[in-house]
Length: 80
Image (tube, rainbow, N blue to C red; front, side):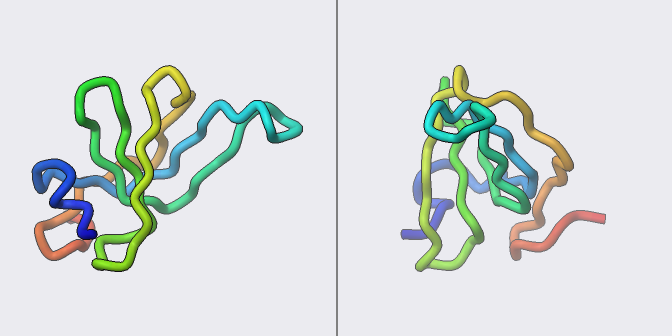
């Protein structure tokens, strides 16, 4: 499934830090991900924009930080 079928086409590249009780530090980092803020109350995260990329959704209460946020162009590259 293509991530753009989940939400509109407004995508970003970012590193995400999540609460993860199973991890010894209590958090986990997801570097260099494609993210979408939505649907409401959720952060949609994937490793890329290809059809075979895994898409995961995290409730916002688990999101600690979104760093290195850069808007992606429609072709999947970072805007200059």
